[in-house]
Amino acid sequence: MKFDNKGVQKFVDDSVALCTPDKVVLIDGSEEQLESLRKEAMSTGEMIQLNQELLPGCYLHRTAVNDVARVEGRTFICTTKQEDAGPTNNWMQKDEAYELLKGIYKGAMKGRTMYVIPFSMGAIGSPFSKIGIELTDSIYVVLNMAIMTRVGIKVLETLGDSDDFVRGLHAKADIDEEKRYICQFPEDNTIMSVNSGYGGNVLLGKKCFALRIASYQGRNEGWMAEHMLILGIEKPDGETKYVAAAFPSACGKTNLAMLIPPKEFADKGYKVHTVGDDIAWIRVGKDGRLYAINPENGFFGVAPGTNAKSNPNALATTRKNTIFTNVVHNLENNTVWWEGLDKNPPKKAIDWKGNPWTEEDRANGVKGAHPNSRFTAPAKNCPCISDEFENPQGVPLDAIIFGGRRAKTAPLVYEARDWANGVFVGSIMASETTAAASGAVGVVRRDPMAMLPFCGYNMGDYFQHWLDMGEKVSKQPKIFNVNWFRTDENGNFLWPGFGDNMRVLDWILRRTEGTVDAVETPIGYVPKPEDIDLNGTDLTTADVANLLTVDKDLWREDAEGIEAFYAKLGDKLPAALRKELNTLKANLE
Ligand code: OXD
Ligand code: MN
Image (cartoon, rainbow, N blue to C red; front, side, top):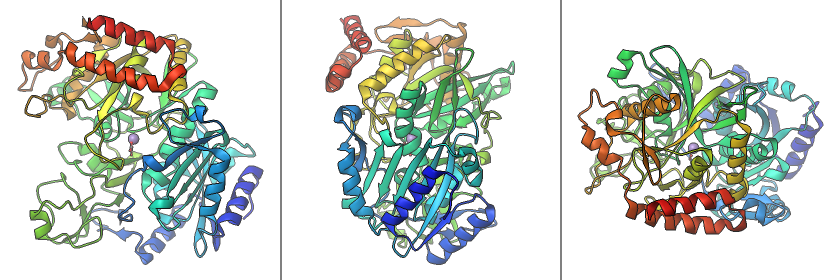
């Protein structure tokens, strides 16, 4: 196969020599080619075509049972020096990693086809955008990449003869867990992923490129790649304000990104416009403000729990041209089902493992869909997708929101005192682990800026980069922390969440406009309870007051956890954050 771009040619030639596929096919981005791949995947059983009247263009795929989530333990940042990956990443010396991986990739595509996918993260040609070439032996990957990114010849034309592209090599190999590696080489713009077929490990544009490699590029080039949704809130006067928000995996980012305002807000004229649900690339604009784009072109959302009440927009998004992974196959009408979709699980069904899902299974509480089962759906299907989704210049940010899943410590919302304090607030984010990553569920872990599994370099340098970016911005967005997950002594959630989160966003917007007061606490500013609009809820001002309390004892305990986490960063911990921690401790005296 011949390419005009020398770098692309070498990457493809070297990878072909290593993996020895029988055939190499360039993905040109045409519907005809994608359709013939869908047919091929159907003929081999890799994908099942669903009811084309009810779910046009939709397919079902099942991964191997041992391959259902991102594998953080087998994800490596491979650099020359360990210090550059830092203490929060798994590290491999990069030359050793190449050696090890070469052994695993050798002949891995024998008897298979290698697909060459040119893809753009961000609208093709936008100054924010970056190009990648993913080589893969999986049709499932090709079809998912064609939803999640912009693929095809146009991307190669835009790349021209530039060497500025990310090289991603994915081989399914034998889906052998022992030889599964997700390796990022930020110094070489290279990703190598082998022995997995699960989206988060193999759709290399997403976590591997748009976060791990891009965060490193952003640091060198003066911009930021963040694990953030981007949301526009249109006010009754027609003005739309944008916020970006970071939450750890499976904390409801997609739901917040597609929020439907409560009736009382909708009646006044509030509307929500989704720009992105997972990743934001953020740059300083000519006017000195921060601008964000969503580099993706689709949503790779968690299916369980998505329903007509929790996220009607996401559900609507999945009704056509969507690939479902590891959900229940409803044999009654050849559609899909998952826990939390509705109260009517199909009686005749196949579970995510490909086995009959019986009455007995259901009675015994055996789940039909994997808790991390997913939909891959085009962004343009989303009923509330923003008109600015393709804007090559991005959208200006008025607020940055951090959030975690804390049962007791963090109040419903608080505002950082200034940028540096906001970076501190992001750096101390913590949450309970969820099913999106393999490992124990329900354990509290520190997840600074929700980037713990996604930062491609030393976390201490990453914090410094955040501090430095603040200096480059003349109109800094205000920084907030939210916690939708506070519970009472019986473990019941105190805040209704979902659409009612609009009530908190409303306070946040009013703070950015300077039209509402706040109360200072040891951790920052919280609302006056009466300033959270409760119209249309059963909640009282006293309930909100309870959600806003800052328990000094719990925070003293938390400060110890922060201290322990910061200690890991050693000399790389920016002095400004050490100072913030000292201030917090003093405020708690
Ligand atoms: C995701 C994740 O899939 O964060 O978005 O795990
Ligand atoms: Mn994510």
